[in-house]
Length: 433
Image (cartoon, rainbow, N blue to C red):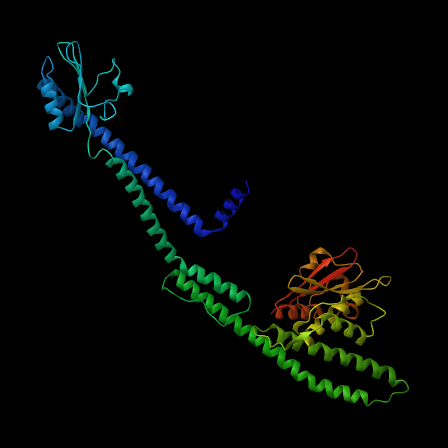
């Protein structure tokens, strides 16, 4: 039953298989209709015109053989005509062909019963019965060959029609490939317009839509980069002015709060710029052999989290060719997210594992987890779950987005799952780019 389900699924999802089945059914239907119609037409013609002529001709053959039947005349008929003759009676017992050589005796045909008139069977006045049939004909196999040749020609015609239809629908393959490229953000190669018909117009319209989308995205990216660059200068000046404020008295608290806000704005702008760099179709990565375990351990020590995080770093893992700065950014964001949302009683855990030709960095907290409806949206830009709506606790929704972009730029992935309790983030990086 497994192959039956697979075949049914392939037929349901494959336009090519559907076309083949439709053409085969069409050929079968046309053949049945044609043969049935011809059989009825020939049968009606046989009954109305041919049958009386054949009956009269058989009567003439019987008269030519004579009564009592003459074997010599019967033999002469079989030599002159493509027929077989069988004579049964009180005086003559003779047949021109053996039963295995002659065709058309039709002994088992119910139409040749004694109580039914026989077209090729005659009784003479002296008590003999003469039967006629088809003799040993050199072309007796031709009807079968003609039948198989007809079926073969029908299949050839169906194959030619299918090939022509596939040629007509070939632009659909180009459109499908183009839509897949556009969905990945690859707008550099347009869909080939092969013909000037409805499918060609559709391909051209999709190309126009993709061009408009590319311009819109480029405009959005350029605007975001311009705003981010322009904000850097006033932020730098504001930070310098804030640092010049006195570090004593009532101004100290205001000065420190202002410096924290400016630092958050600076980090936000840096994240936006980094996100735009990683969102491009051609990301410039500075790959170098990197020890992921050492990278994770150094990051934990750098952020003074050695006492707040549990590490599982096995020995002997191979170095991996990655952009260490970008991977550090991704792990840092995952680690900050785990520390922010983890339970106070249980420390977050960071582990590095090998899975085939990939290395995994797994970051797990023991907090309340995430509603299953939000799991698929984690990693989207500016997306925050219901439990992290506040800026103080939830961020702006760029940290996990940057981590996912880093994984994608390296040909890997970032997935999330509820670990019951807590949330587990799995960063996968292939060992071979």
